[in-house]
Image (cartoon, rainbow, N blue to C red; front, side, top):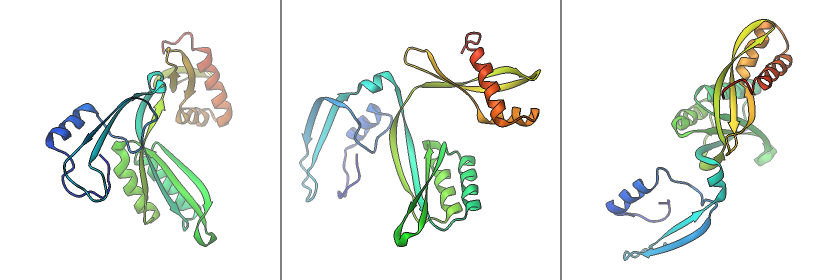
Length: 224
């Protein structure tokens, strides 16, 4: 189902029940697929601006067989009247409200005013608090929201105990694997590296190098 110029009931209870049971979610853009079969069905109700036709397409995409997929929301707004301290606070509060990523892009808008585009990635469960936070903290008058699909690889967080300067630390390690189950990426969590750096009073960069080396040396010994 898509928004448009039509008014009134656009499906029957039977059609709605079929849609609900055939798919767990909808998409806002046409997916990249190779068509296998296409079917059309015409209705009897006459509409002035839109043909009363339903099209069903059955297709496949090799990438979706290799990788996993999920749905994520892109939330954007432009601001041209916020100082640096306020923007920094906006970033902090967005993460506190569940944003996955916050990205700032610089540009020029009307009347040659410098502008900052704030772009957020969020899952559905945090969409409302992220939008409410963006409105309240920036004073923006409009927010763009798009649901989009993305391809993902298998990933997880695994705890690991390492020794640094004769002290034991618990480090969360982000692990990604290819379609054959082979580890292709290991990265310790930023906050854990930061804690080790502060606890041992060593530079963050040095702490990151030590932790990464410990993790790499333990790959064969750990059951990830």
